[in-house]
Image (cartoon, rainbow, N blue to C red; front, side, top):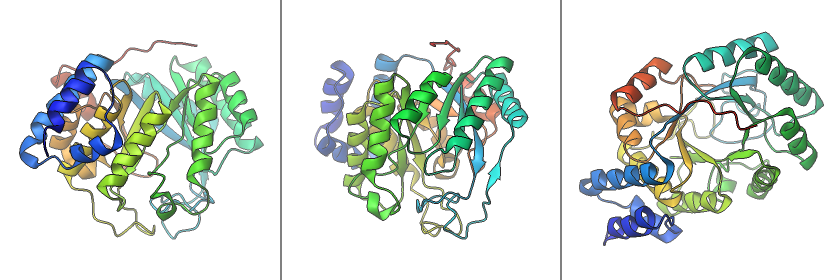
Length: 331
């Protein structure tokens, strides 16, 4: 693999300049015997350019299932036979979930809805939810409500939303194999509007969906171009009834190489463990990733899949002597 680790040590660790797409392909081809060296470098990059702290977040689904889009990995699509049905959450449940999230030490609470984009009903529900949460608990509130108009971006900003999540999902060149009901460009446009509004942009994707190494590197490079505050990295957890339901689970070593590559592409970004890590990496791999460039975790369960208990992650962070970031209200 030549000296890509040495190149990355000079370019990323010393200069803080992320690797380019073709360099990331080399990282993703790192032989197994050099993987510990690669992960150690990614960890050093994270500590130098992001600091020691780990950010903890909880997520809750305000509207689950019944989504009109056909994202091939997602059991919330109304187009597939997966066993997730449309459900709305009420405000007291939302507040309770925010309080439970804050009790874990999390600084961020994300309200998610399975929709193409929010309608007036959903926007008013989110506004009422944010007001109720703010009255009950001190926590930053993030939202993930699909594709937005400029007017909706402005509304969410006015509501005090701290961070907006909208994932690219996959590289531009692979996107039509993953979603056919909307385009990569539509997602990109929402991300640009969010970033320009002053809200923090949270934008990541999924790996292990049949994409090539080159396309995995392309996704990391396209995310780096967007310069999001945070990148949630998801690993495909094949869901029954979806087009990707029969795919193999991604190899754990490939997942760790991907974590290192994303860190080396984006040295200053919050890189968050998200869905699928329990299945792909297990407990030992989760530890390796935390020592290989990750600096944020979602604790508890995900939207339609079970995660690790929050206490398991918090205990692991304590054991690794990684301080949990304290809440700092920036609004």
